[in-house]
Image 1 (cartoon, rainbow, N blue to C red):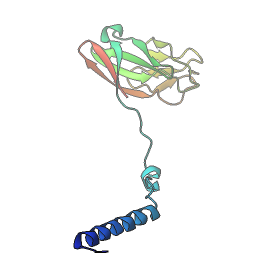
Image 2: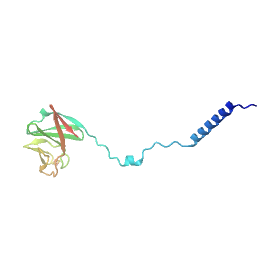
Image 3: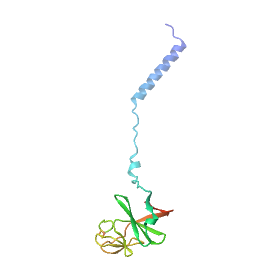
Image 4: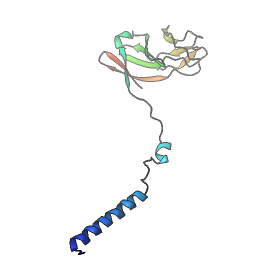
Length: 148
Ligand code: FES
């Protein structure tokens, strides 16, 4: 049997390929994981954004209008002076009723008689001790937007 140079080189390449395949098969693939610190240290994302409440014309000067955003948020918008809008969570800080609106110059809750300031939302009378939650509001053209 004669062995020429091509046969020897071809045999060496085949043997090298076999060894490489064997080596690859023996090593486990690295797991695709995320380091624990990348998830443990992250704070949950809060949803933020702007919500179109409605037309500014729906809120009369010296009064207030409620806009239901969803089942967990109703926004009360007041207009103490022409063109000056304030917005609050309509959820009463006493026991969680939705306030009625503006009566006699104050935000009134009908459940137990709490009264709040129409400009600041501060508790002024009745059983509530803390202010209504303030909500940033913007007037764009004819529309009111809550920035949450
Ligand atoms: S829930 Fe508003 S006064 Fe009690």
